[in-house]
Length: 602
Image (tube, rainbow, N blue to C red; front, side, top):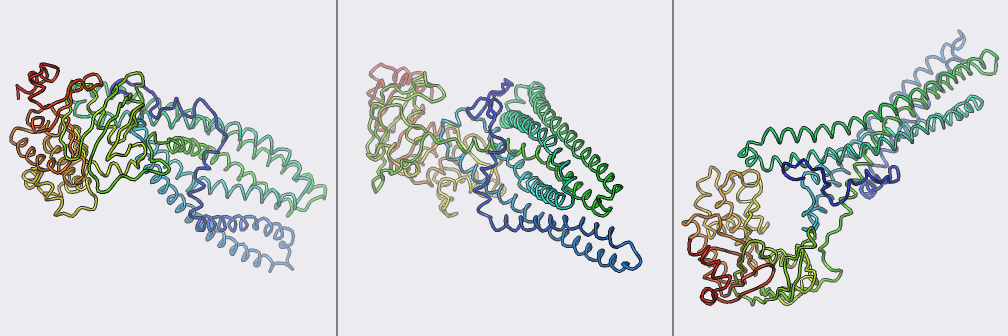
């Protein structure tokens, strides 16, 4: 969804997942089985408590029958006290078992969903850059939060209620057969009339629940996009337009939820009517049998109680079936996310990178197009080598493919043809994590997190000490502004570092790269947001940093380019010139033209 377009395109690369195709009933919930197996002891305890509670409930009608048939006479007055004492004990057992069932099932649901959320998040962070080229972060977050909450509701409550009523229904049905086979025949004849609407409406509920969840994800994605760009939104005074678009998205989500709720309501009404109408009919038939002497009053009472239990269990099943169907829709959405495979992954037997790390880089006839735009070639036969310790600048007009070289070095993508090598090893044969640990990046668009300054710098090396962080900040010329902040390094800087200037954010990114201390340094316009004074300080820090390691620089600033050993000039995905600044400036080609346009005004 574009910023103000109101588009409803799917963000995960699948057209309206689940809406245009109907999967088998509750099969998506099977994805929870591996998580449940981890806590089989707690699940077994919940099932045991559930079984005890069901048996205690089923014991009540037997006591009622005996009390009616044998207790209402002067000579058996003592039996009534015994029956009521037994019933109090049964009720106590029922209360304790129900409490234990609630505790075990609820904590099991919380535990399973916590593990599921962690697994989904960990999986998403391992997906390749190509996935995020088309995915919307708001929809991913919706699946990570709203959908897992829906599953928690099902695992922590609905499944428990469903199992309780399942046991109660079949236990009551069995006792009905024992109590009166004749009356049970009428019940068995009524069951298909009740179950068929349950199954049919359940499918409709699941489909519409999935539609509601997808539509809600659209609204969440749109809101996330708007909130992330709220200052731009306000600067262009588009609050009313954005509000109208979001209201429209919310209304679509409401309409989808309304259809789902309407289906559940109709399902509930139909099933409850059929269930209790059947009970009334059976009660009428039973009354005729009592009058004819074929049945005692206590036996009829016992049978009716079991019939009510069975009817109540089936009625409850009709309600929780809708909730479980909703959870199945949520599980399906999460399953789709978990089924996404990284386009870039470590080979089965990765080739180890040599030690010690040197930072040598080689591109050999590399051709590449982004997966989202396969028809647009970004790199067209790029070849160059960078020896350890060499400093190489990459310049060229926008869209020439400069940043793409960094993307391939970081192995966000693999080339369509040719090879990218680090320390003599093709990256496609190496473990991406091992390769990335040899690289430090200072991007133009700095990622700063809603945490303290110290934590943001520590992102470069999580095990770094406070002294290491302070030293890196000093080398990046960040100490002078950090010490002026209220809590110094412990100052919280807000989401995306909103409380800092662009130059301050960039110095934090440079400190992060210094802390990483990798043999290969990638600088993407690392000084573009700095004022003249800060640039001089940071440039000195970068000079010290670059002196020990291989460095690739994307830059327009004259000071940065002049200090590089070599300059590669790119245009339309190709290297069109190569040499030092003096050589290229006197050649009169593209570089000389760029120098006149950009450098001489510096």
